[in-house]
Length: 440
Image (tube, rainbow, N blue to C red; front, side, top):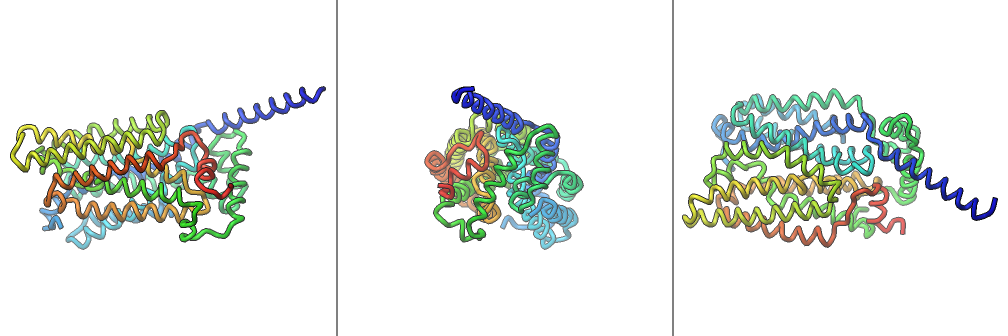
């Protein structure tokens, strides 16, 4: 056999192995689907908590005399305790404690769920599976927008317990993240977890070795601390992660989502009808995002989403401005409805879920916990600020408020275009290596 024949045979063997490994990586097993479902039960709780404020605000303020003024299981303890505290709250202290507890749980869910799903799913469907996090949030939000018009706010809190209990029970039946096991040096358990996730007949040796090699390379450096994130090699990932989180919140999304009823009322559109319209479109638009995230890619979808939010913020600014001057009184309620529905739809299709997907992809395992802490803290700190200030801003100047959100969305388009790489169809290890100079 000649040298050229040996070379061709070797190349054919390598190609065969590559194709076999690609097929194995593309397997979507029942375990992956079940594990994802269990994870996004927490996302459903997230949506219920987000929708609760809008539909229960009037009832709570009337009954209690208020003014306007790392694990998923661990998070569910706070979520369950929070819902119970809200349901049986005799005064504002218990109500505040309940909302704080559910807020703490939602903060954990927002980080843990997308990271876990990203680490267990095959690369070609990773974006769609992680986006199911946003889909289930929309389901919870939609449910509360509908039943919140008929169910007392205390009973509404008890309904929020159902997905919490479901997740607590089913969490015992899903595998640990193979990448986390690899980080801990538990190679046999890492391979066993991969085998369970990819199927009994799949050859997971190459994927397991890639995880092991990546962990070895990162372990050669010093143990990571939060301050290590500010090294030059992590700067692109940190800027992208924190930047997207700030853009998500400073665009006004939390204020609009939590107090959508106030926006409808301010624009002269009936809030109960507006909530029903949102409930009707909430799930279809999230499904659209789930489909498009692997068709269009993260970057184009995020640009389209932010552009839609930008235009709808401008429409709302003009609508409130016309209303304040007594112009187009018959049309401004319609403009308000279109602007609110368009803003929330554009948000849910991309900006609502994609920052969490990208965050779960861009940080290496050795700094993922520290990075997750920072980006989640940035997200929810500004979410609290926007949610707290939103009603006051609307009362101050509704048109000016949405002009601010318009400006931030416009700046966000520039940021995404200039800074964000496409991560669709790439392994986590490839994405992370390309964003750092660790392996260069």
